[in-house]
Image (cartoon, rainbow, N blue to C red; front, side, top):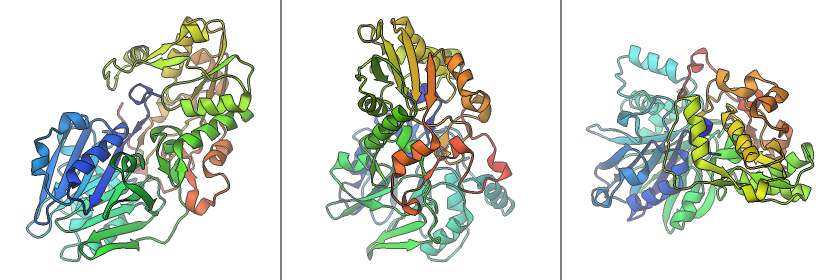
Length: 470
Ligand code: SF4
């Protein structure tokens, strides 16, 4: 669905490269592939072996970078970031990578995710005299690292990682080292690739495809990778825990051409659609998916039921960005501008409308309305994920509990609110089967906390500070 009107937003994408003469350019292209993960800020930091060079700004990558910047971004190593502002809010000061300069070693840091104990750590740091310049979690990590004093950076990072809790996929670049790490449960995705002799890292493998890199493996939960002139080293900073990779990455956030934890996103979505057809079949004439992220599940639903898949809804690609709409009314207007129902396909038909998720319900109500206005006789809504009843504390902006339609209404009540003839959601078991299949939970387990309320980490009282946009 359409992130900016749906109220479901990924918080960031990270990219890193070591050992490539066009490190900045490769990072720029890599970030383009990750642009869907954040559109409010972008930045690249390179190392030329002596100093860090930085360029970043508010907006889309193409707004932030022009050709001239690349002559300044010298060096064979780079990290890059695209940001969606939730935790800490927007503004230039929060655009990553954050750079911390010192007389000995400077450090640039970029991360994707949310720390669940950030507020406690901030209070602790401030009580000990640290002055925080931004409101982002990333700075907390940097201060914890810097606090260790004159120890090797690897030890300082390991000690900081022992203190932070939550979801994080991070990259740290100094003049002569690159560090890459993932939280102990692997809540966020992070993969390793090779581009010739160079090492590359990205939140999604679609970034590798765009620059011609080959996928090597996942960064493992609790793994800290260090690359410098001595080569590539991997350490574990925690004992292995069962993986709980965010299931919403498969449902909605990641691009269909990405593989997450060795599972293709499009293929997973198709299986979700097939499973949904088994769990909630319906008699109808056509199946349509809400573009773009629901099309794979709609194809799966169609294949499983034999009901033909049709393009009943079209995305208006060139309407310009309406951006985050602050009011309910404007959100609805946003749907109208961005989607059209195809009268020639849906008129006089019983339509199955497959969508990936329902957050506030506003968008679903509008789309059902669009289909009915275009002459659909019946609209049966099938959602390829379970009802979202709980907020996410791990880096996804899912709105506050009060705004989540499924946290306050039964399925039948939601059906009535959105005006559908029938409504069904995929079960949590069905979602797990679609992603994990018969693979082992230790390596391939998923988080479903926004559906079940079973959070895979501790949640502190001060975690429940709305980190959300509205
Ligand atoms: S709570 Fe939901 S959105 Fe957040 S990490 Fe878990 S599955 Fe993903």
